[in-house]
Length: 255
Image (cartoon, rainbow, N blue to C red; front, top):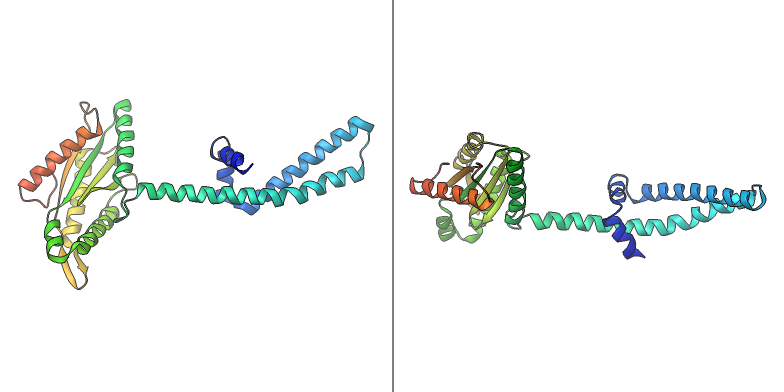
């Protein structure tokens, strides 16, 4: 029984999910109970008219009291299970999109979002940009201060980047000491302004870790969508080549 209700909740009846989120289990149970009583009374009146053409007060009383007792006790348990299921699903969805160490979005989430943005740009002749961020002195930080200091540096970079991007933009961990940006409906120059602001913010900040002051330098490679781009990987390759140029020229800037 519960399994069938859960399947309905997940698939065919999303309004139940939305109602539980907005009003809570108790209020939804109350509404369902009232609706059940109304239906019970209407059905009872119909049956009484069809059988003897009159309305019985006792029949009406029974049609009210039975659902008023049975529905809340059963419905509340069912809705509580569904509410817990909804909470667990949402929590799992969040966990599956977030990098555990840094709190940034993970690589998988980035590729899903970037693929959707690419499809939109191809269909509507749109534009968007992608950028790869790499820490210039990450190996030095790990070698001299330890891997925990390196992890702390990654978290601080995530904080600074999230403070400087817009709500629609996506900032994700690409792997190791690399992060990646997605700028929807944004050309290269506008994206560059944001990235240069991030570089200035990171360069100006001294990170403290166990009484150690750490200065971070970063490099960023930037790529803009064009009609010849068929896959997200093509843009990533272009951004990676730009990042290589930045590194070759001394780093701490965006190309």
